[in-house]
Image (cartoon, rainbow, N blue to C red; front, side, top):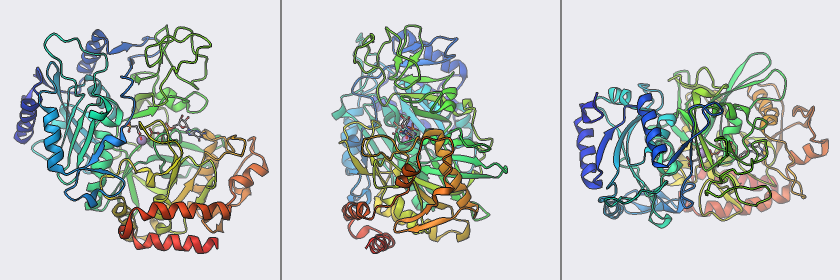
Amino acid sequence: MANDQSMTKNQKLIDWVNEWAKICQPDSVYWVDGSEAEDKKLFDQMVASGMAVKLDEKKRPNSYYFQSDPSDVARVEDRTYICTPKKEDAGPTNNWADPAEMKTLMLGKYKGCMKGRTMYVIPYSMGPLGSTIAHIGIELTDSPYVVVNMRTMTRMGKAVLDVLGNGEFVPCVHTVGAPLAPGQKDKAWPCAPIEEKYITHFPVTKEIWSYGSGYGGNALLGKKCFALRIASYMAKQDGWLAEHMLILGLTNPEGKTKYIAAAFPSACGKTNLAMLIPTIPGWTVKCVGDDIAWMKYGKDGQLYAINPEAGFFGVAPFTSMETNPNAMLSCKSDTIYTNVGLTPDKDIWWDGIGVDCPEGTITWKGEKYTKGSDVQVAHPNARFTARANNCPAIDPAWEDPAGVPISAILFGGRRPSTVPLVYEARDWNHGTFMGSVVGSEVTAAAIGLKAGVRRDPFAMLPFCGYNMADYFGHWIKVGAAAPDKNKLPKIFNVNWFRKDNTGRWLWPGFGENSRVLAWVFDRCDGKAKGIETPIGLIPEAKDINVQGLKVTAEDLKELLNVDKNLWKDEVVLIKEHYARFGDRLPKELAAELEKLEKNLA
Ligand code: GTP
Ligand code: SPV
Ligand code: MN
């Protein structure tokens, strides 16, 4: 089979690819088939060109190391656009540009942008191939790094074209924005300067145009661009939910399983929670997904979730056999590492991996580490790209096209104070309120953010494809449309990141979070009690099992404390946050805020 347009009979697709080839002017066009041989060939080429390093085959089978350009290490929220016809429809939390103007501007940049390179055509499916809830995208890219990452993160290749037939696809155009003049030597990691990058979405016409970055969410367009920004817009139109959520299956000592979805902002613990190993006896956790959930009501009236991805693009630093063994085992083989340290024996290293950094390790910037030097070995947003199938804790139902029934939804972020370890919403609208006011200390997952706590509603601030106030309204609507209110998931807020006034973590986190999940499970099972507070229901101290922990009774009291004065300050911040949305804010949420204020008086 030739890797060309003979792979499909979809004339619309062929015409679209040819049109873009004319604009971008690549040396050649290559249709990706998704085979292992093709994957190997691409890696070999990248090793030969100096873009990739093959890791030691014994220590890290079939795994490769990449170093990005120092300017291209994470998502760029400043350079990310939602281009709806009307500015109000993108809302106050998104960068907006007029679609026609943006297209004119970007077409100017796309002209000849792939000179000296190959244009790869990547057919991919978000969701199990052929499932009625999956959606197909086609990404054009001039980055072989993107191709090999998409192979792990999505179902990709010829099989997708077969399923697509003459059907509709979401067109995604990507370039690193670094054309080569004849004879010009390529960089190991070509990209455009930050101020020339554009990560652009046209939700109404369902198109994605990305220019100038080769990294993560900027370049793997099936992930944040499609499965969240475009999909959230589709979900609003069609009455479902596209969310920045992990999905896990929790089984109690009696063998009963419940599924939980959880939204935490970037680098706030989704991958860790999704595959945690419970420290309390008799409980197990299985992973369905670690970043994105698409949720719809099933015939039985319950909310069902699928993971549209096929792999993990996980934060490397502080992942270890101690904190997250399942992630370490997932990235043992067949893994792509980006911006970690490269040891002299061709293995990888990052802070918190559990061993000292070997002398002579090459840092993500290409410097040599010597003991005592204070160079940064791995970038804080260094990532591994690993196959979900390689995760020892993958749930047997993770690819079930019907999804898994969701019993509980958790929200949370990094809050050093104020927000207790866990509290439960009184009902769906109260839970929607909780999601809408999530705050978190910013992390390294995006470039150029000011340090401190920012509001990141539903962990969707960088990922909502339309007006955030309308998104809140959509959540209210989905709750109201529940076929059976009693089957709605219960909603909780959690906070693993409380500190005391010396800066010490009050809660050990990681596997110990199972102690909180157990209370959530029991609440859903009608067993444990919830105590009313002004902000919602909290556990009785006795219902959080702290056996074997260093957490003292005092610590636990502090962790579960609802300090009225701190919450009054919080209300002021929530009001500021809500004010951005003007009268587009759903009245149900204004009412929830009023209720909270009254409860605190
Ligand atoms: P994205 O992939 O950016 O969406 O991130 P994520 O939400 O999946 O975050 P991840 O699980 O990768 O965790 C990010 C960082 O938070 C890592 O360095 C973890 O070690 C740390 N972390 C995760 N869970 C906990 C926890 O329970 N307590 C503490 N203290 N740190 C945690
Ligand atoms: C996030 O930032 O939430 C991620 C990493 O999951 S990226 O794919 O770069 O968006
Ligand atoms: Mn994420």
